[in-house]
Image (cartoon, rainbow, N blue to C red):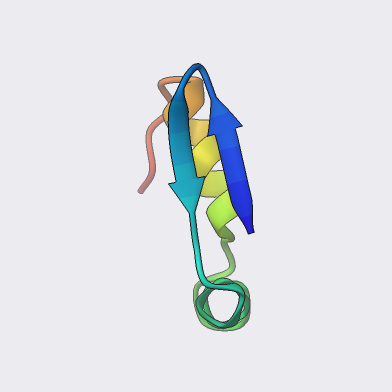
Length: 42
């Protein structure tokens, strides 16, 4: 999957994204959201 915003590209592996969702309760989509919105990740 790819995500592009303001000439920045985010690419990730769907299998690793699934692992994150199952084991860490977060997805790459959520991480990108926090990066774009200057949010903090704990």
